[in-house]
Image 1 (cartoon, rainbow, N blue to C red):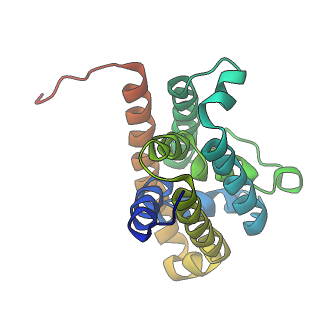
Image 2 (cartoon, rainbow, N blue to C red):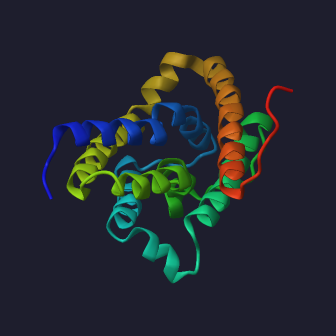
Length: 194
C-alpha cells in the first residue's frame, strides 16, 4: 500500500466525472424549492460513508443481501429515472419530509453515492491502491460539501428562469443516464445508426 500522486489524480478525475456534483445543482435546487432543508455536512457525511463502505467491503456487502452490482445499478437507474421525470414534468413523486431526511434521499443516495459511483469505486479498486482511492474520495467529498453550501449563490446567479431551464435540460440528461445505466446492466443492445 503506497501513496501515488498519479493514482490519486486519476481516481479523483474518474470519481469527479461520475459523481458530477456541478451537474446535480439543478436537482438540488429543485429539491430545495419543494421545502426540503439540505444539510450540507450531513449529506456529505452520508455520501462519504456509503462510498467508503463499498471501498472497504464492496461486493461482499451486496452479497449479504444476495444482490450483485448489476442489480444494484438497475435499481439505482429506476430512482434516477423517477427524479428525471419529476424535473422534466414538474411533478412530485418523492414526498420530501425536510425535518426527517434533511434531503439525505435523494441527494446523498442515489445522486452522489449512487449506483454509478459505487460501481466506479469497485472498478477502481481493481486498478489502484485503496489508500489512493480514499484520498481521491475525500477530495471529491470536500468539493461536494462546498457545492452543497453554495447552491443558494448559484440560485441567485441563475434567477428563477435560469433554474427552470437548467432543471429541464438536466432532467433530460438525468433521464439519459438512467436509461444508459439500465441498458448497460441488463445486457440490452440497442441498434446503432438508425
